[in-house]
Amino acid sequence: MASPSVLSEWPPALTKAQIDELTLLATSYAFSTGLLYLPPAERQPTVPESAVHAPLALFPSPFPRSLFEQAKRIQGIYNILYARIALDEEFLDRIMGTENGVGKVDDFIGQLWTGWRGLRDKGLAQSLHLGLFRSDYLVHSPPDEPTSLKQVEFNTISVSFGSLSHRTARLHRYLYASTQYYNTSPDLRAENFPENDTIAGLAEGLATAHKVYNNDQARVLFVVQPGERNVFDQRPLEYELLEKYSIHAIRQTFEELAHSATVDPDSRVLRVAVSPDLHPNGFIEISVVYFRSGYAPHEYQTPTHYQTRFLLERSKAINCPSIALQLAGGKKIQEVLTHPGVLEHFLADEKKWSAAVFSKSELDELRQTFMGMWGLDVGNDLLTSDYDALQSGKEGYGVLKARELAQSLVLKPQREGGGNNVYKDSIPPFLNKLPPQERQAWIAMELIVPPTGTGNYLVRAGGGNQAPVKVEVVSELGIFGWALFGTHVDIRQKEVGWLVRTKGKDSDEGGVATGFSVLDSVLLVDN
Image 1 (tube, rainbow, N blue to C red):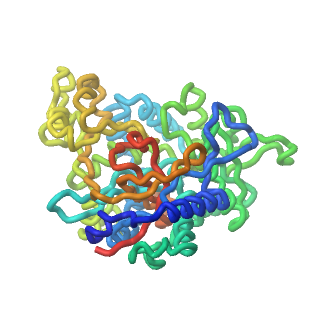
Image 2: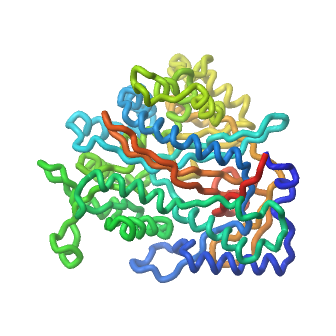
Image 3: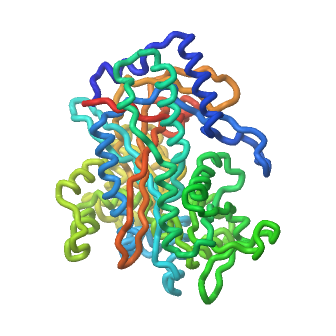
């Protein structure tokens, strides 16, 4: 870990004049370079009328160089791992299906899995999958133990802040170049600000899939949420596709696609209808379906929303992600990967993967990022469901263990997007109300213990009081990657950048206690 002085004395002391100047420079840079959100509104105007800068940190946050390099190094293994999980239908059926898996008790997962199984039965037109991934980590620093890197989760759908993290890293490099941060810390040196080119990296993944689709006239479809405020994180990927690869994009919501999208019954080509004034044919062929939505139950409010998702999946277009890959990103999968022999099955079985296997030391490095996890439905072995307890309604070992260790745990459902987890004191009353049949949908995970004493100056999103707030913080590192893969096709994959999100230390999720969390970047410090 960094020397105690770096963490406990971070951020460096500043005068009010220095804070004011850095705040002005930072917010002006944010507005000048697209580090922005659309402002909150009951209904976003069709044509944007204004913007606010994203919440940000004035200083980059210190992060151990060796752990940062480890996170980047193992991203390629994680890319391959989740690609292979998505291709293992038997494994996904068993863990996430409606017969014996999570889909049996979780309606959202069950709906997705049932639709996917129906499509498989009829025959899928596209065997390729594209994943744009982000693996999230915290520094784990419990008393009297070596500091290590621990995974929070692995995201397989709608990974966000790639573009804005790119811009935030450049913001901090700009502040350093402009002010040298007033020479307040010897750790603030140019070589400690790592490069971050996430926009180019994520766009490369989309462009690679588009090229394999092999129709230059086709376009990439961004499936977006209605009233999306985070457009400035999405639009740069469109611009990069156009400027670097001459690939056009189109944006539509599920609601719009329910009326505009069709699949040719013979060729299985996906087409989206548009005004003839915008395209002479009145429709656009789609090469890649890129989901920036579709990860939460509230986005599927009617059967039509599910049918639209399944329409896109049954087409010839390459889905990013496919339903299989979305299911692979479930928290239950993350927990099952900690079971004995599961990593070896996916990464070290020479009979299955031939030469494309990983060494014991590589698997150990991956496994070292896992925290302890178990399903709430399990028996004493922490591996298999306690069906007697589930049927009788009694609390099995998984629930009893969660009660006993509640202060050091988080409970996670099969959901993305934040705000779904249950922490510490909230666990016992939650377990009191949780129906026994729903235990299978939840996992218990040991809490990561971040270093103490590290602070930063956090600036709220534009609007209202712009004065930075100095608070003790926790910083979460995300590593981006992409993978293009299919059955009997070599996996093409790459690690492509990083993200830092920083929040007040007393916040469990999304800045609940302090009211906000911010975009940040890395300052590498040596062990």
